[in-house]
Length: 486
Image 1 (cartoon, rainbow, N blue to C red):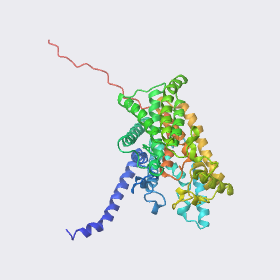
Image 2 (cartoon, rainbow, N blue to C red; image 1 turned 180 degrees about the horizontal axis):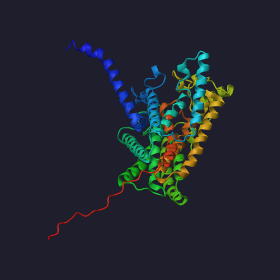
Image 3 (cartoon, rainbow, N blue to C red; image 1 turned 60 degrees about the vertical axis):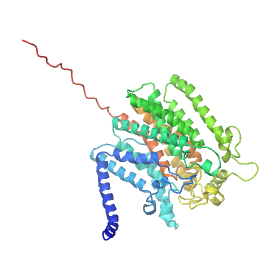
Image 4 (cartoon, rainbow, N blue to C red; image 1 turned 90 degrees about the horizontal axis):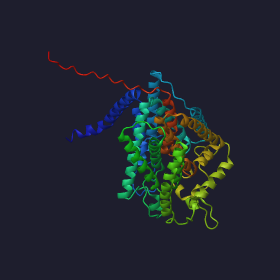
């Protein structure tokens, strides 16, 4: 046995290469025939794995899945996966003569790609490495949103495919919410609890990562529209039960996340959902739902704020750490924004470059790491700082293009597709607070989840133009012949 072990050890790398090659060939084959089956495992990873370990006292974290392979390949393996899956879907669509669905975001993503290429070129001329110029801490993650949007539009081509995707979102959203609630009730909540571990605020929370609350919001939107829209579609009792469970569990999971951005975002998403209903039903649902949601948010908000040092009473307590102080040292959140704004005003047209660090980041406690100064808590200001008014204009144009299309799409979608179309718009509305005061663009998971939300209205609109598959006609009833005695 000892003589065989060296040969086994030597053969392991070759065996791994062979297995990887076989898996790649199998994946390409599946992608060319059923491209949507390459989308589901990709979405499942983003729906279920945290993207941050901030606030956790654990040594190991599952967030490494999003950066795995980036040391050698500049970007993570998950991003190369979505690019390969898109290539398979694009080839399959070409062979099957399936036209690319309408999407007015394509020119904007092309412009983002050109802007990143210019930054990379200028950076290399200035002595900046390609790795630094293409770093996720800049704005390269925005370009990687395009392959996922295109992959979804090319992979789900019929109403049955979209219904299948809708069921997937409901089941995964329900499972994720139940996981968070059970862990909150019986196992101390999310270990990534920055409030308890670092700020001594004695609360348990379901999920600290904003993307988990986003998953719950998307599932909540689908369930709410399916249950309360005026023109209901026929669905089995099983799926109606799943929708009711999803509606309750996801809302409770978001409330117990104790994230201010999640609370405000959920209210915005709730308003988007309500606008999909007739006026009378909208008023009834808001009369019944808003007091319950408002009371729950008020209770958990007071529970958190009363334990937070420096938080005042009233609505201003929600932004206690982002207000300028009359006496004493300035808040670090305010200092961060002031430092970044000063550098932006110094170079307003082009910004400091995708690789740049803002001046004075060393004074911020959470920037005391290798990535210090490369990100800040404002997605809009992050883009303005790194790419100047040029990038800010592209961001504004991308958002306006989506809003104009989504507004038209939600007025035209049939009842069976209104849920998934609304879910995409509600998801974007939910992320508005994080876009303003969070760090969305340096995070792979957040940008890919944003891309998923952006794709849903375009997908629903494209599929709505297809003819519903006709159910096979039932055979006429023919009675069995009976023997009649002569």
